[in-house]
Image (cartoon, rainbow, N blue to C red; front, top):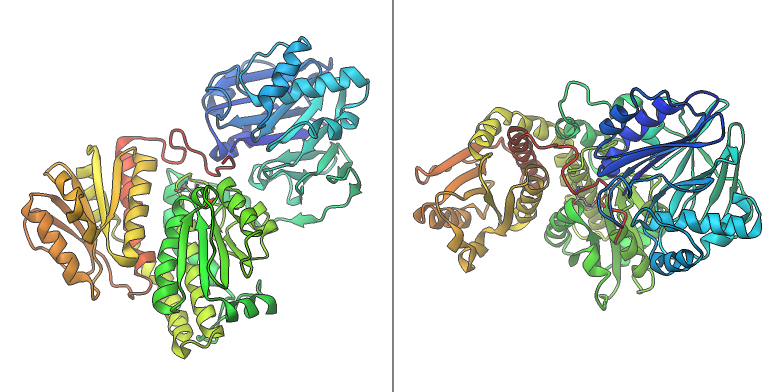
Length: 609
Ligand code: AGP
């Protein structure tokens, strides 16, 4: 959570900081602030509650000037949403922006209070900046010299950037617990939480590693590792184009990302389907092949939307590969005593690769005797990819809307390829890989067709936007899709929604049914449709308000609205059927006028446990 941008340049950087921190709003948008060092070597700080737009308004008529500075957008953890709690925090000559949580902040705070420090905020970040100031005052040393020693006193995550108004030539970046990158400019350098903040000024980045401390000057960068030794880190040339992060003709990023799905699935499949019959993962080698050959169980751990993708994969692993698969929410995996299955392989799933719960689960799994681990992730530079034995990239492209869409369908695409690959390595069934390759080849076209249901969905959305509660029902591999539909609606439209397996309704939730609760039923034409029709009938007879999404016309009673979904092959039906649910949530939220890309209380990557 929280976004950081900092720059040391030869020009006034106020507009740069404002524009670039706005690009990181997806990481948090409770409040925003910036600090510069002016010509007189004094700090100028501007902070506000709310989004970066408020900060832009607040800075507009002030003639601010500074060639070095830092900016922050906050997702509140320690301390309520208020201007006092907004970063940057300052202690005399030191200013800081921070992403993470200091677990022992209370002890350090009371120590510092005894030393006479006055705290103006409730944040753990102010503790860091006063601690740095105290160490500097005590030792008379430079900020860099006291940094390594001071950090040893902190427990928790503390990726941060610090600057010293007595030495305005450099920024100090510390990477611990959340990503921090350095962008290399011409006679100027930058630091940010994500490269998208810096696209347009540079394509060249250094990804700091866990424990790194970097000194960033106009023309020089020096990096110390966690043992305080100077290290060289690789410079990476980004292939992300600035256009990718523009909304273009779309009103919201989420809308753009929904409609981008055929393209992102094509990217995900590119160079991975060979000769119309085999799946090829260049990222995997002999070691993984050997593990796949011997594994007897798969354990997938993820959060939110990624967890729903994992639940679909469980059906695929068990029904197509006959491999037992368990799926668990990461925060539960990390909260219980674990007994692992024989020859089990550990898989994490994440769009960002920075989700703290999932990362923690991976770290715990390494001590438990799994055959190995793999992450399926959208961000190559992420902590999950760095820390996993092996990885597969989803190649969805940058996803900015807080509500995941294209990352979900590309995760499913990779998972289905993985199932096919494992089946073929185990020589379980010759035809499965070929069959899946064939089906995946048509998948982007199927999604294009499904996206054409837009008008019909908009009509349903018009009827439903005032509703307070909604139910989503699905059976088998469509139950996770029902869960995903409900999550989307909660996230962006703030409508209470629950998902149930179709057959479970009669065990209690049927009591909720009345004419005011719309029920979305996902009912593709397959061997289970007859059973689902019985459930539909049960709801009809109790006067429920039913919307069935199906490729068969289902008009059992007059209180049913049927959304005719174009044909799709059974295996990939979960990937297709989520699309109308994404659209439904989107158009309902649009009618309600919520901030779709930045729903209240949320952030895109949840880097706190
Ligand atoms: C989905 O719409 C949410 N924004 C959220 O549930 C998300 O999927 C979850 O936080 C996991 O994120 P990750 O995939 O980046 O790990």
